[in-house]
Image (cartoon, rainbow, N blue to C red; front, side, top):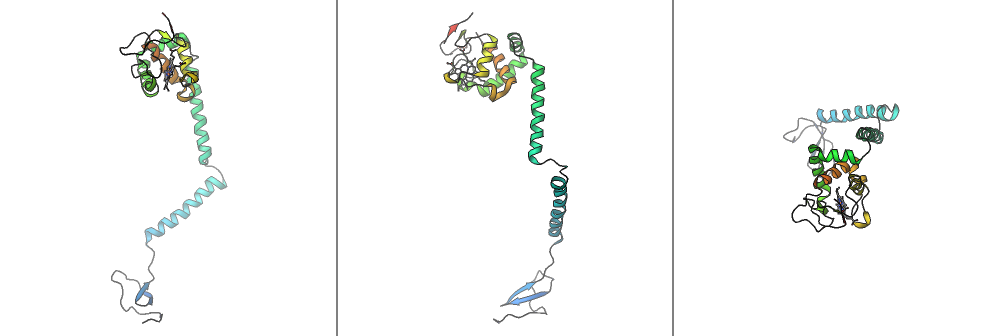
Length: 199
Ligand code: HEC
């Protein structure tokens, strides 16, 4: 049984195959099965999809490429951010103080503070690596616009990061408003005052 031969009649058909055996070699039977319909559908489906894809993305370019789609999303986000900044107006002592007195803004500010600032200034604001923000002594000034500028531009050499580029204008203002709301509360266990005392 070692020579190859073609079989035209079924000798020992495999139990699950209704197809004719077309080839037998050394006792191994080969049948010419039809491909399952679902398999063919995925193949034809992929071919049909490729035609639509090619026409849309390559031939007529009616669909934006992922790069273009990303650029469009980015432009939309930048526009929304610009509109938001315009609506907020320029930062000032007055609107920072107003924000710090507005409880909802202070609560949002507390969240920004907990996420970005507590690691160095302690969750209470009492200070750690960074100075105590609840006393009346300030290295860089405790007036609203001074606190805002410190947070936005940082004192990188002193170890205070510039947050403007990291968290954006809105969250810088929320953080500033929150710092103003805890200023002078002298939380227990706070770090000793650093800098000049301000009334
Ligand atoms: C990596 C540590 C670190 C983080 C995080 C950090 N700070 Fe600071 N911060 C410092 C240090 C250090 C100083 C003191 C800088 C100096 O000596 O010039 C400082 C100073 C300040 C000051 C000025 C204090 C003064 O006495 O004038 C304010 C206000 C402030 N940080 C607010 C924040 C806020 C708000 C955040 C979060 C958005 C934040 N910091 C996050 C380390 C940090």
